[in-house]
Length: 400
Image 1 (cartoon, rainbow, N blue to C red):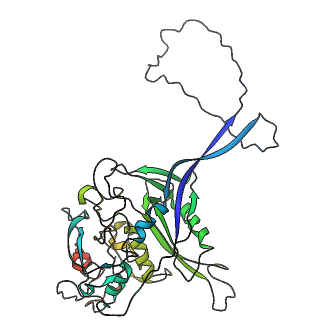
Image 2: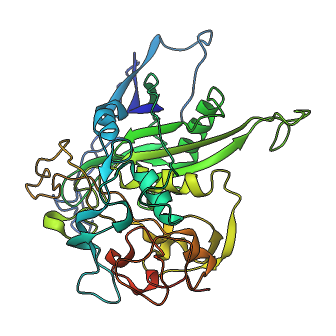
Image 3: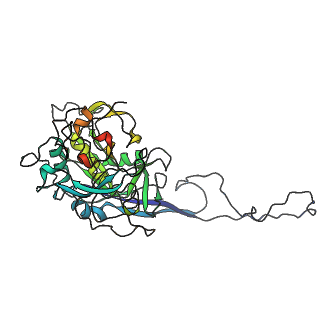
């Protein structure tokens, strides 16, 4: 597992200037009919005209050029310990949760506020499990004494520093005063692709950053992507040539630790669960169900995540972005937001995950763990089951 540190560079240059003095003769007194510029409009400004990038051998004025780093550093190393201690890698009892997403008071605009918890995976009550293990066991009804497991064994690799050019990233501030990096997704994806050349295809490299979010296109406010996963095949075209069945196919995931107060409003308000490992849990769950990004299902659409539109991709986290629950004890970055409000609540916030039968329109659902309360569909369609407050997840997906 590799981790990212992001810094923003800015160029600094100093030049020796040749000064030219201009003599201006005053003419006749201004005519009363001339327009008068008011003092508020009368500003002293300067500008530049043209530009060049001289070579060291060019004939011009003496000059020098250097560069320096500016902005802020967002180091994944800072959140490494908290991530390893999170439910993603540490064991917890998934029999119940102390809090889960509630729909809020706006039926046509889900508020994703903090609501009461309750029974979660009743079949695994009393068992100590990692998050993804608990998710997969619930998805295929392998809870209780089943020997079915999916374990993640973290192998921490040295930190890699990526300096973001000023034309590829900027800083933004949330309404609660939390500052985060906002980087062009195409540029960032290229950096991750470069790192893939040295990765081990038999392992899942997870690239972890702290408060690094991505914008799509040139608009910095077309934001924010908090994670992605994918596959990269090497060789000619999209795969290895003459591999004799031994082609290298590298899976990977990038996710950012989301600081409290970027999305999460104060005191369990809107987007309460969209903090800490929410993005990481999303990407690892999607990787587990579709590691090669080649699993397709009947098109689905959900009003809780309209940003994904109508899609046929099996992405288990996309339908339930912002919906989650409390698990474990989180001691990292639990103070107030910069504006004095409080979004952190001392727990981690894994995302709920849509299960395979939801996409497959399986009804009755005899594949997944039964819902907490008896239902005609029998099995749950998301990990949270009855704790997911939206009716669209108490039944199979609908078409579009």
